[in-house]
Image (cartoon, rainbow, N blue to C red; front, side):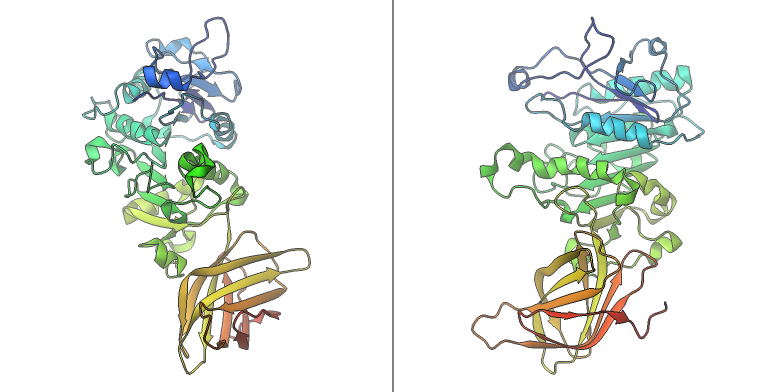
Length: 449
Protein backbone atom coordinates (compact mmCIF):
# COMPACT_ATOMS: atom_id res chain seq x y z
CA UNK A 1 0.00 0.00 0.00
CA UNK A 2 1.41 3.38 -0.97
CA UNK A 3 0.45 6.49 0.92
CA UNK A 4 1.79 9.94 1.48
CA UNK A 5 1.43 11.88 4.67
CA UNK A 6 0.90 15.59 4.92
CA UNK A 7 1.57 18.30 7.33
CA UNK A 8 2.66 19.79 10.48
CA UNK A 9 0.38 22.80 10.76
CA UNK A 10 0.97 25.43 13.36
CA UNK A 11 -1.87 27.66 14.38
CA UNK A 12 -0.47 30.13 12.08
CA UNK A 13 1.54 27.37 10.54
CA UNK A 14 0.94 24.28 8.52
CA UNK A 15 3.36 21.61 7.40
CA UNK A 16 2.59 19.11 4.69
CA UNK A 17 4.61 16.26 3.15
CA UNK A 18 5.52 17.34 -0.29
CA UNK A 19 8.21 16.22 -2.66
CA UNK A 20 11.32 18.30 -2.72
CA UNK A 21 12.27 20.44 -5.70
CA UNK A 22 15.91 21.30 -5.18
CA UNK A 23 16.00 24.19 -7.60
CA UNK A 24 12.98 25.98 -6.18
CA UNK A 25 12.46 27.95 -3.04
CA UNK A 26 8.90 26.68 -2.49
CA UNK A 27 7.98 23.04 -2.06
CA UNK A 28 5.26 21.57 -4.25
CA UNK A 29 3.10 18.55 -3.55
CA UNK A 30 4.03 15.61 -5.74
CA UNK A 31 1.62 14.70 -8.51
CA UNK A 32 2.05 10.98 -9.01
CA UNK A 33 0.22 8.61 -11.36
CA UNK A 34 -1.61 5.32 -11.15
CA UNK A 35 1.56 3.65 -12.44
CA UNK A 36 3.47 5.03 -9.44
CA UNK A 37 0.76 3.71 -7.12
CA UNK A 38 1.08 0.21 -8.53
CA UNK A 39 4.86 -0.06 -8.73
CA UNK A 40 5.78 2.24 -5.82
CA UNK A 41 8.21 5.16 -5.68
CA UNK A 42 11.26 6.24 -3.74
CA UNK A 43 9.40 9.29 -2.42
CA UNK A 44 9.69 9.70 1.34
CA UNK A 45 7.39 11.43 3.77
CA UNK A 46 7.90 15.19 3.69
CA UNK A 47 6.75 17.75 6.21
CA UNK A 48 6.16 21.15 4.66
CA UNK A 49 5.55 24.19 6.80
CA UNK A 50 2.99 26.91 6.02
CA UNK A 51 2.55 29.94 8.23
CA UNK A 52 0.70 33.22 8.01
CA UNK A 53 4.00 34.65 6.83
CA UNK A 54 4.34 32.09 4.03
CA UNK A 55 0.76 31.15 3.18
CA UNK A 56 1.42 30.06 -0.40
CA UNK A 57 5.08 29.02 -0.25
CA UNK A 58 5.72 25.82 1.65
CA UNK A 59 9.04 25.35 3.43
CA UNK A 60 10.54 21.94 4.02
CA UNK A 61 10.76 21.10 7.71
CA UNK A 62 13.75 18.88 8.34
CA UNK A 63 13.34 15.82 10.57
CA UNK A 64 17.02 15.76 11.48
CA UNK A 65 17.65 19.49 11.81
CA UNK A 66 14.52 21.12 13.23
CA UNK A 67 16.36 24.44 13.65
CA UNK A 68 16.88 24.81 9.90
CA UNK A 69 13.43 26.31 9.26
CA UNK A 70 13.48 29.85 10.69
CA UNK A 71 9.74 30.40 10.17
CA UNK A 72 8.87 27.58 12.57
CA UNK A 73 7.66 29.23 15.76
CA UNK A 74 7.00 26.70 18.58
CA UNK A 75 5.07 29.33 20.53
CA UNK A 76 2.25 29.03 18.02
CA UNK A 77 -0.28 26.20 18.06
CA UNK A 78 0.55 23.52 15.52
CA UNK A 79 -1.74 21.58 13.19
CA UNK A 80 -0.74 18.44 11.29
CA UNK A 81 -2.89 17.78 8.22
CA UNK A 82 -2.61 14.16 7.08
CA UNK A 83 -4.39 12.88 4.00
CA UNK A 84 -5.30 9.28 3.28
CA UNK A 85 -4.44 6.62 0.74
CA UNK A 86 -4.29 8.05 -2.78
CA UNK A 87 -4.93 5.16 -5.21
CA UNK A 88 -4.02 7.24 -8.29
CA UNK A 89 -1.25 9.25 -6.65
CA UNK A 90 -2.89 12.59 -7.46
CA UNK A 91 -2.76 15.43 -4.92
CA UNK A 92 -5.89 15.90 -2.78
CA UNK A 93 -8.08 18.53 -4.44
CA UNK A 94 -8.96 20.06 -1.07
CA UNK A 95 -5.45 20.46 0.32
CA UNK A 96 -4.79 24.10 -0.57
CA UNK A 97 -8.24 25.19 0.59
CA UNK A 98 -7.82 23.39 3.91
CA UNK A 99 -4.45 25.04 4.54
CA UNK A 100 -5.84 28.49 3.79
CA UNK A 101 -8.92 27.91 5.96
CA UNK A 102 -6.90 26.76 8.97
CA UNK A 103 -4.48 29.65 8.73
CA UNK A 104 -7.41 32.05 8.48
CA UNK A 105 -9.38 30.61 11.39
CA UNK A 106 -6.70 29.50 13.83
CA UNK A 107 -6.42 31.54 16.98
CA UNK A 108 -3.41 31.93 19.16
CA UNK A 109 -3.71 29.73 22.27
CA UNK A 110 -1.58 29.33 25.39
CA UNK A 111 -0.97 25.87 26.86
CA UNK A 112 1.20 24.27 29.49
CA UNK A 113 2.65 20.84 29.94
CA UNK A 114 4.36 18.19 27.84
CA UNK A 115 5.34 14.55 27.94
CA UNK A 116 8.24 12.41 26.74
CA UNK A 117 7.27 10.22 23.78
CA UNK A 118 7.31 6.44 23.91
CA UNK A 119 7.79 3.94 21.13
CA UNK A 120 4.57 2.90 19.43
CA UNK A 121 3.32 -0.67 19.65
CA UNK A 122 1.26 -0.21 16.48
CA UNK A 123 3.10 -1.19 13.32
CA UNK A 124 0.30 -1.58 10.73
CA UNK A 125 1.34 1.53 8.80
CA UNK A 126 5.08 1.64 8.15
CA UNK A 127 6.72 5.00 8.51
CA UNK A 128 3.95 7.58 8.56
CA UNK A 129 3.48 7.98 12.27
CA UNK A 130 7.23 7.65 12.90
CA UNK A 131 8.03 10.71 10.77
CA UNK A 132 5.28 12.74 12.35
CA UNK A 133 6.19 11.71 15.89
CA UNK A 134 9.83 12.49 15.21
CA UNK A 135 8.88 15.99 14.09
CA UNK A 136 6.87 16.54 17.27
CA UNK A 137 9.59 15.03 19.45
CA UNK A 138 12.34 17.24 18.01
CA UNK A 139 10.34 20.40 18.45
CA UNK A 140 9.04 19.44 21.86
CA UNK A 141 12.44 18.60 23.30
CA UNK A 142 14.56 21.21 21.50
CA UNK A 143 12.24 24.08 20.60
CA UNK A 144 9.67 24.13 23.40
CA UNK A 145 6.66 23.04 21.33
CA UNK A 146 3.71 22.35 23.64
CA UNK A 147 2.07 18.97 22.89
CA UNK A 148 -1.31 20.20 24.11
CA UNK A 149 -1.23 22.90 21.41
CA UNK A 150 -1.03 20.30 18.62
CA UNK A 151 -4.11 19.58 16.51
CA UNK A 152 -3.92 16.65 14.12
CA UNK A 153 -6.48 16.45 11.30
CA UNK A 154 -6.40 13.03 9.67
CA UNK A 155 -8.42 12.04 6.62
CA UNK A 156 -9.28 8.35 6.16
CA UNK A 157 -5.98 6.48 6.63
CA UNK A 158 -4.54 9.71 8.01
CA UNK A 159 -6.96 9.50 10.93
CA UNK A 160 -5.34 6.29 12.19
CA UNK A 161 -1.85 7.67 11.52
CA UNK A 162 -2.83 10.58 13.76
CA UNK A 163 -3.89 8.08 16.40
CA UNK A 164 -0.64 6.16 16.17
CA UNK A 165 1.28 9.40 16.53
CA UNK A 166 -0.80 10.40 19.54
CA UNK A 167 -0.12 7.03 21.15
CA UNK A 168 3.60 7.76 20.92
CA UNK A 169 2.99 10.66 23.29
CA UNK A 170 0.63 8.80 25.64
CA UNK A 171 -2.34 10.92 24.56
CA UNK A 172 -0.72 14.25 25.47
CA UNK A 173 -1.44 15.77 22.04
CA UNK A 174 -4.22 18.34 22.36
CA UNK A 175 -6.70 17.24 19.68
CA UNK A 176 -7.18 14.72 16.90
CA UNK A 177 -9.89 15.27 14.30
CA UNK A 178 -10.69 12.15 12.24
CA UNK A 179 -12.48 12.78 8.94
CA UNK A 180 -14.20 9.56 7.87
CA UNK A 181 -11.49 7.34 9.39
CA UNK A 182 -10.63 4.38 7.18
CA UNK A 183 -12.55 1.16 7.68
CA UNK A 184 -10.79 -1.47 5.54
CA UNK A 185 -7.93 -3.14 7.45
CA UNK A 186 -9.12 -1.50 10.70
CA UNK A 187 -12.54 -3.01 11.35
CA UNK A 188 -12.51 -5.34 14.30
CA UNK A 189 -9.03 -4.25 15.39
CA UNK A 190 -8.11 -3.54 18.99
CA UNK A 191 -7.53 -0.01 20.25
CA UNK A 192 -3.77 -0.52 19.87
CA UNK A 193 -4.30 -1.04 16.12
CA UNK A 194 -6.51 1.96 15.32
CA UNK A 195 -7.52 5.42 16.49
CA UNK A 196 -9.21 5.58 19.89
CA UNK A 197 -10.10 8.31 22.45
CA UNK A 198 -6.94 7.77 24.49
CA UNK A 199 -4.73 8.97 21.61
CA UNK A 200 -5.28 12.66 22.43
CA UNK A 201 -6.76 14.90 25.08
CA UNK A 202 -9.77 15.32 22.78
CA UNK A 203 -10.76 13.22 19.76
CA UNK A 204 -13.62 14.10 17.42
CA UNK A 205 -14.57 11.87 14.47
CA UNK A 206 -16.87 12.36 11.48
CA UNK A 207 -18.39 9.39 9.62
CA UNK A 208 -19.70 9.78 6.05
CA UNK A 209 -19.01 6.45 4.31
CA UNK A 210 -19.18 3.79 7.00
CA UNK A 211 -20.67 1.18 4.64
CA UNK A 212 -17.67 1.29 2.29
CA UNK A 213 -14.32 3.04 2.88
CA UNK A 214 -15.12 4.47 6.32
CA UNK A 215 -15.21 3.10 9.86
CA UNK A 216 -18.61 2.34 11.39
CA UNK A 217 -18.10 2.35 15.17
CA UNK A 218 -17.31 5.22 17.52
CA UNK A 219 -13.66 6.23 17.77
CA UNK A 220 -13.63 9.53 19.64
CA UNK A 221 -14.98 11.50 22.56
CA UNK A 222 -17.63 12.70 20.10
CA UNK A 223 -18.57 10.94 16.86
CA UNK A 224 -20.66 12.61 14.19
CA UNK A 225 -22.73 10.59 11.72
CA UNK A 226 -23.64 12.94 8.87
CA UNK A 227 -26.88 11.85 7.19
CA UNK A 228 -26.66 8.60 9.12
CA UNK A 229 -22.98 8.08 8.33
CA UNK A 230 -23.24 6.40 4.94
CA UNK A 231 -24.98 7.73 1.81
CA UNK A 232 -24.49 11.48 1.40
CA UNK A 233 -27.04 13.67 -0.45
CA UNK A 234 -25.95 14.60 -3.94
CA UNK A 235 -23.53 11.67 -4.28
CA UNK A 236 -24.07 9.13 -7.09
CA UNK A 237 -26.18 6.08 -6.33
CA UNK A 238 -24.92 3.83 -9.13
CA UNK A 239 -21.54 2.72 -10.45
CA UNK A 240 -22.36 4.26 -13.84
CA UNK A 241 -21.27 7.63 -12.43
CA UNK A 242 -17.64 6.53 -12.60
CA UNK A 243 -15.00 7.24 -9.96
CA UNK A 244 -17.22 9.73 -8.16
CA UNK A 245 -19.45 6.83 -7.10
CA UNK A 246 -16.56 5.38 -5.08
CA UNK A 247 -15.11 8.53 -3.51
CA UNK A 248 -17.96 11.04 -3.13
CA UNK A 249 -19.34 9.84 0.24
CA UNK A 250 -15.85 9.34 1.66
CA UNK A 251 -14.55 12.69 0.46
CA UNK A 252 -17.64 14.56 1.67
CA UNK A 253 -16.18 14.47 5.20
CA UNK A 254 -13.48 16.94 4.17
CA UNK A 255 -15.89 19.38 2.56
CA UNK A 256 -18.22 19.26 5.55
CA UNK A 257 -15.31 20.07 7.84
CA UNK A 258 -14.18 22.90 5.59
CA UNK A 259 -17.69 24.35 5.66
CA UNK A 260 -17.72 24.17 9.46
CA UNK A 261 -14.90 26.71 9.55
CA UNK A 262 -17.39 29.32 8.37
CA UNK A 263 -18.98 30.36 11.67
CA UNK A 264 -22.17 31.52 9.94
CA UNK A 265 -22.77 27.97 8.66
CA UNK A 266 -22.35 25.93 11.80
CA UNK A 267 -24.33 22.70 12.09
CA UNK A 268 -25.81 21.55 15.38
CA UNK A 269 -25.27 17.85 16.15
CA UNK A 270 -27.82 15.99 18.27
CA UNK A 271 -26.84 13.13 20.61
CA UNK A 272 -28.95 10.08 19.82
CA UNK A 273 -28.82 6.30 19.99
CA UNK A 274 -29.52 5.83 16.28
CA UNK A 275 -30.33 7.73 13.10
CA UNK A 276 -33.95 6.62 12.93
CA UNK A 277 -34.74 8.08 16.34
CA UNK A 278 -33.02 11.30 15.31
CA UNK A 279 -35.15 11.63 12.16
CA UNK A 280 -38.27 10.91 14.22
CA UNK A 281 -37.51 13.95 16.37
CA UNK A 282 -36.82 11.95 19.53
CA UNK A 283 -33.37 13.44 20.20
CA UNK A 284 -33.83 17.20 20.02
CA UNK A 285 -33.31 17.88 23.71
CA UNK A 286 -29.94 19.32 24.70
CA UNK A 287 -30.50 19.49 28.45
CA UNK A 288 -27.41 17.43 29.25
CA UNK A 289 -25.27 20.25 27.83
CA UNK A 290 -26.89 22.85 30.10
CA UNK A 291 -26.80 26.43 28.84
CA UNK A 292 -24.31 25.66 26.06
CA UNK A 293 -26.88 23.71 24.05
CA UNK A 294 -26.07 20.77 21.79
CA UNK A 295 -22.55 20.78 20.34
CA UNK A 296 -21.80 22.07 16.88
CA UNK A 297 -20.10 19.89 14.32
CA UNK A 298 -16.55 20.58 13.26
CA UNK A 299 -13.86 23.07 13.94
CA UNK A 300 -15.43 24.84 16.93
CA UNK A 301 -16.61 21.80 18.90
CA UNK A 302 -13.82 22.41 21.44
CA UNK A 303 -16.17 24.92 23.10
CA UNK A 304 -18.01 21.80 24.36
CA UNK A 305 -14.84 19.89 25.19
CA UNK A 306 -15.18 19.92 28.99
CA UNK A 307 -18.75 18.65 29.07
CA UNK A 308 -18.06 16.03 26.38
CA UNK A 309 -15.12 14.68 28.35
CA UNK A 310 -17.40 14.30 31.38
CA UNK A 311 -20.10 12.54 29.35
CA UNK A 312 -17.71 10.02 27.83
CA UNK A 313 -18.14 8.86 24.24
CA UNK A 314 -21.04 10.71 22.62
CA UNK A 315 -22.71 9.69 19.35
CA UNK A 316 -24.41 12.49 17.40
CA UNK A 317 -26.34 12.91 14.15
CA UNK A 318 -27.18 15.68 11.71
CA UNK A 319 -28.36 16.03 8.12
CA UNK A 320 -27.00 18.24 5.37
CA UNK A 321 -27.76 19.76 2.00
CA UNK A 322 -26.28 18.36 -1.19
CA UNK A 323 -23.75 21.18 -1.52
CA UNK A 324 -22.44 24.26 0.27
CA UNK A 325 -23.79 25.68 2.41
CA UNK A 326 -24.35 22.26 3.94
CA UNK A 327 -26.19 23.47 7.05
CA UNK A 328 -29.96 22.99 7.18
CA UNK A 329 -32.61 24.97 9.03
CA UNK A 330 -34.24 22.69 11.61
CA UNK A 331 -37.65 22.73 13.31
CA UNK A 332 -39.45 20.54 15.79
CA UNK A 333 -42.89 19.65 14.41
CA UNK A 334 -45.67 18.59 16.79
CA UNK A 335 -49.10 17.48 15.55
CA UNK A 336 -52.06 16.51 17.72
CA UNK A 337 -54.87 14.91 15.72
CA UNK A 338 -58.49 14.31 16.74
CA UNK A 339 -59.54 11.60 14.30
CA UNK A 340 -61.39 8.88 16.14
CA UNK A 341 -59.52 6.32 14.01
CA UNK A 342 -55.75 6.06 13.71
CA UNK A 343 -54.29 7.62 10.59
CA UNK A 344 -50.94 6.81 8.95
CA UNK A 345 -48.99 8.92 6.49
CA UNK A 346 -46.28 11.50 5.92
CA UNK A 347 -46.18 15.29 5.87
CA UNK A 348 -44.85 17.86 3.41
CA UNK A 349 -44.24 21.39 4.70
CA UNK A 350 -43.53 24.58 2.77
CA UNK A 351 -42.41 27.79 4.48
CA UNK A 352 -42.85 31.12 2.70
CA UNK A 353 -42.26 34.80 3.12
CA UNK A 354 -42.38 37.69 0.67
CA UNK A 355 -38.95 36.91 -0.77
CA UNK A 356 -38.46 33.13 -0.76
CA UNK A 357 -39.79 29.71 0.13
CA UNK A 358 -38.44 26.31 1.07
CA UNK A 359 -39.99 22.85 1.26
CA UNK A 360 -39.28 19.57 3.02
CA UNK A 361 -40.86 16.13 2.85
CA UNK A 362 -40.87 14.16 6.09
CA UNK A 363 -41.35 10.81 4.46
CA UNK A 364 -38.57 8.50 5.61
CA UNK A 365 -41.37 6.34 6.96
CA UNK A 366 -45.14 6.38 7.53
CA UNK A 367 -46.10 8.09 10.79
CA UNK A 368 -48.91 7.23 13.18
CA UNK A 369 -51.43 9.97 14.03
CA UNK A 370 -53.62 8.96 16.97
CA UNK A 371 -56.46 10.87 18.61
CA UNK A 372 -55.29 13.37 21.26
CA UNK A 373 -51.76 11.99 21.02
CA UNK A 374 -48.90 14.27 20.07
CA UNK A 375 -46.77 13.11 17.14
CA UNK A 376 -43.30 14.72 17.11
CA UNK A 377 -41.23 14.92 13.93
CA UNK A 378 -38.02 16.59 12.79
CA UNK A 379 -38.46 19.04 9.90
CA UNK A 380 -35.30 20.25 8.18
CA UNK A 381 -35.19 22.75 5.33
CA UNK A 382 -32.46 23.56 2.83
CA UNK A 383 -32.52 27.24 3.74
CA UNK A 384 -33.62 29.52 6.53
CA UNK A 385 -36.81 31.39 5.65
CA UNK A 386 -37.41 33.84 8.45
CA UNK A 387 -39.72 35.37 9.39
CA UNK A 388 -42.22 32.78 8.14
CA UNK A 389 -45.36 34.43 6.81
CA UNK A 390 -47.20 31.44 5.34
CA UNK A 391 -47.10 27.68 5.86
CA UNK A 392 -48.41 25.04 3.46
CA UNK A 393 -49.12 21.50 4.70
CA UNK A 394 -49.82 18.36 2.71
CA UNK A 395 -50.87 15.03 4.21
CA UNK A 396 -49.79 12.06 2.08
CA UNK A 397 -50.52 8.34 2.41
CA UNK A 398 -49.46 5.34 0.38
CA UNK A 399 -53.03 4.23 -0.27
CA UNK A 400 -54.07 3.94 -3.90
CA UNK A 401 -57.33 2.03 -4.06
CA UNK A 402 -58.89 3.08 -0.75
CA UNK A 403 -60.90 6.30 -0.33
CA UNK A 404 -58.92 9.43 0.39
CA UNK A 405 -58.31 9.97 4.06
CA UNK A 406 -58.59 13.18 6.02
CA UNK A 407 -56.36 14.14 8.89
CA UNK A 408 -58.05 16.40 11.42
CA UNK A 409 -55.44 18.44 13.26
CA UNK A 410 -56.30 19.76 16.68
CA UNK A 411 -52.97 21.55 17.06
CA UNK A 412 -50.05 22.20 14.72
CA UNK A 413 -46.88 23.55 16.33
CA UNK A 414 -43.58 24.33 14.57
CA UNK A 415 -40.66 25.35 16.80
CA UNK A 416 -37.33 26.56 15.33
CA UNK A 417 -34.39 24.63 16.75
CA UNK A 418 -32.34 27.80 16.61
CA UNK A 419 -32.46 29.08 20.15
CA UNK A 420 -34.46 32.20 20.95
CA UNK A 421 -36.89 32.07 18.00
CA UNK A 422 -40.65 32.06 18.50
CA UNK A 423 -42.69 28.84 17.93
CA UNK A 424 -45.54 29.00 15.38
CA UNK A 425 -48.95 27.37 15.76
CA UNK A 426 -52.30 26.80 14.09
CA UNK A 427 -55.40 25.15 15.51
CA UNK A 428 -58.29 23.16 14.05
CA UNK A 429 -57.06 22.24 10.57
CA UNK A 430 -58.50 19.73 8.11
CA UNK A 431 -55.92 18.10 5.85
CA UNK A 432 -57.28 16.18 2.87
CA UNK A 433 -54.95 13.61 1.42
CA UNK A 434 -52.61 15.01 -1.26
CA UNK A 435 -54.11 18.51 -1.08
CA UNK A 436 -52.23 21.64 -0.03
CA UNK A 437 -53.57 23.65 2.88
CA UNK A 438 -52.04 27.10 3.30
CA UNK A 439 -52.39 29.31 6.37
CA UNK A 440 -50.70 32.08 8.32
CA UNK A 441 -49.10 30.88 11.54
CA UNK A 442 -50.19 32.46 14.82
CA UNK A 443 -48.57 32.67 18.28
CA UNK A 444 -48.94 29.50 20.30
CA UNK A 445 -51.40 29.69 23.22
CA UNK A 446 -48.96 28.11 25.63
CA UNK A 447 -45.90 29.93 24.34
CA UNK A 448 -43.50 31.40 26.84
CA UNK A 449 -42.56 34.15 24.44
